[in-house]
Image 1 (cartoon, rainbow, N blue to C red):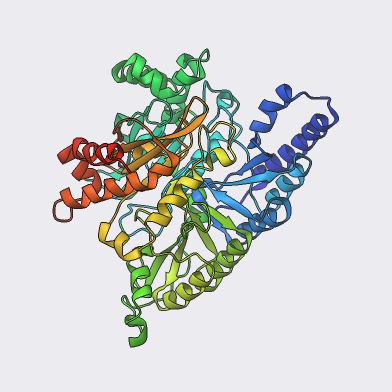
Image 2: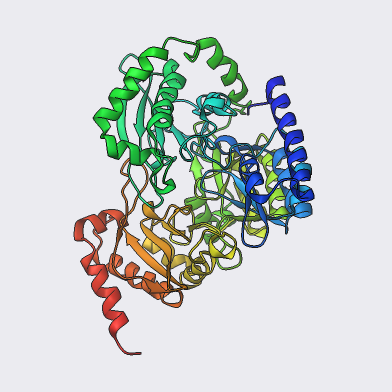
Length: 555
């Protein structure tokens, strides 16, 4: 993984010292909260309902064991013993004392981490898939390109005060596991018939108040023009994006207002002026960064480990193998997803300090000291010998990280919601827990099959509810918490936005509503038909009839 050079170290150290002074002035009263607001946001610090929340950057979701142990220390010493993984592959700490933030940032800097640009109207953490570098279907490891984007966008003065926050995702695999179509810029890496590395560029995607699937603006962009083309897009957005209304300030609104053809013309005109300038990437620069992402020294192993008979007949282990273990590009290895969704015991995406330490240990014992954070708020060990899977499963089971539900209904994506966030209209965590209790039968979950359920506590859509097969959105009705249900959303190459089925429901009704939706799906689906396909084929009416007819019946 990437290691800081002297410039990275100097920048992060100076930012820590700068913010220490700003925090001291805020505590002394020299700075008002209004004056402090933009300064703390530049350092990933939010003021929520009960305390400050610090969001730490995990570029493209890659962590070392040493870094994860530092996050565990922060959770244990400066928080309440846990951290929350986000859909942007970062981690949040929800109970932070303002006076301790500079010390926390100093501890992060010591292990080459920071919280810069995890909030504010700037280019946020560049994301890619959790299996980058090891996925069997990828063309190349996308992380060098993501790292180049990170270096270029970090404290880039031209783009630190954009009209609104800006998110970029990069995918280099056959399957899109990075949700590139719902980002401000989505980049898909591919090769032409001659083997040249090219980029497909999408713009104007995003969720939130106005969910939109990104539109293709360019095919066939040579990889060396990555930075200059992204720069051209950002310049057009910076020039024309609205600053008078934050609800209409995202690039998706600008693209919709201008039309993709007019927007593309502006971008192309801007790009022609800069495409052959200093932002053009060279092979030498790419190789300099790519050196940090060279594959580890894999052993020569045979594919398909033969487990002892006792293990083969252990249904729990077999179930875990089928759900939580992913194929690896190197023979004899696998990638393992550690589920942070054990059911009602912990909120989705929460990881305790003890679990972080355990995962850091396993990454060294069973791999090469590397961990990934997945878009779905789980952790991934990318390089595990197949012969070690049984022992890892035993340890993960003891630590509460081996629930065999990856990709199933109880693998819920959820934001922290109204329990913490001052922007939320409603709580997310109790809704997730109620659904998980309702669907705790693993056999039934496996019978249902692949199905995503995403929950957001407000229209900001941090839980990406629009692209869940089933989406749940918390809404406010005269000071009461209600929940709107959408069906048919999907991510990947066939990304789709879910459609609202009708009036919202009270919190106590939601688990039963989800159960009726699932029953309808099981009755209506074709052989092996995914949920989103069934929704597209039969429409919303059968689901609405089942749900609302049941609501009308007397108790």
